[in-house]
Image (tube, rainbow, N blue to C red; front, side, top):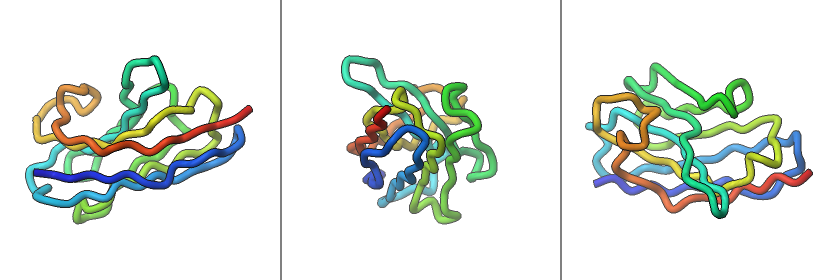
Length: 124
């Protein structure tokens, strides 16, 4: 069982930066995918970024490529999302997640455990 708690959200002006953190507890030894998702009001939850293969590989959605950077500590106790050049369309509730399925970490079906979310609001 894995518990995840996000923090670091807030309100910023367009072009600003934020760093989100996700603290993990419980057994994480079998984790393959660690990722970030986001959901705006009235919209479906979308994949944002993933860290996998023991933290050696990362992938990003086209909408955040070049602006966001995901990383994790070696012990997998904390997952980060560094967000730069924020845009109003980045406004959403951001969730971290982990999974044990050996499959593409771009797929939501690869994830089993989810955090409660942290709000990010970007104003024009």
